[in-house]
Image (cartoon, rainbow, N blue to C red; front, side):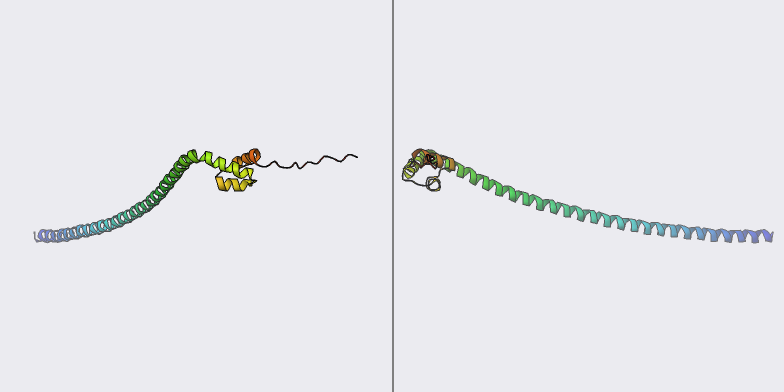
Length: 150
């Protein structure tokens, strides 16, 4: 029977070594898993930070563009308001002084004023100045000459 007990002790020793070996394998597997999880988490966090930085940069660029658009829009609104005000002034003053402008233009045309003088002095358009000069200006000499009789 002593051989049985030696064999048993030997098997028990092998089982203890195997148990120790399995315990070391589990510990190594756990350490490897924790390292792998830490690496994966670190990469995920860095990728999230890059995406956040990219989104922040895009948001800043969009805000810059919106600010530029708002400035342009405000400029156009001011310009439009100025043009509307100018048109209102021209319409209100044009309705009351247009008759006086035409009377002055007729008087100047009778005195022999040129088309440009009528336009600048009375605020007439080219067509209006031409018409006033033709109707009220001094008669122009005909450029045609009658052919000499041969």
